[in-house]
Image (tube, rainbow, N blue to C red; front, side):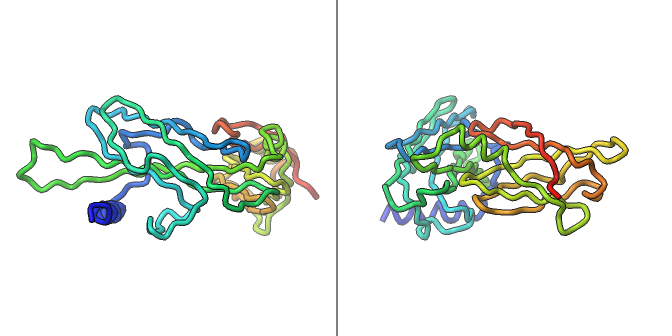
Length: 245
């Protein structure tokens, strides 16, 4: 009964959740998790930077942030799923792969969720209080046994670029078996003015995506440009690229 009541409480809180780490007392150390298939488990560190304890729930999803918790089916066990974090203390999460079938010829991606539920202010016990739970999410990349970090770097550096269907777009094709996170495109037009992309995006293995440039047609930029991708540690890396004809 208590377990069902707690699940109901969490479901209600999710309706009033802010998905942002900017205001969270409980933060995830790192911006992504790489899970090599050769490892029995990987760990993720959390820190509570607040001056109050927090109730925390953690779970993994397939990419839909709004999916009901009892509907999620992922090949991982996350321990502990619910816990109390004291002020200015840390907590380690263990992610254990259950061995369910995942592709062996390409990466798979999942999402780690951490819900920070602040305590009620006892000094305002007789007043109505609006508590806002804050959710942080980072990607989990499950990497098959025959792949390594060097190959991931080569994949991110090997995107194929073309003129997009729209005049202000460039398209990138990821022919690799890895996910590639493009954070920004930097180019120059024929007059030497700087041009940047409107936003970044993630390309799945075998996927092609378009990137819009701010205020300029792609056919007005120089053939040679560079883009940034995020590596296994979340650091931005520059790559020199060329628009293929």
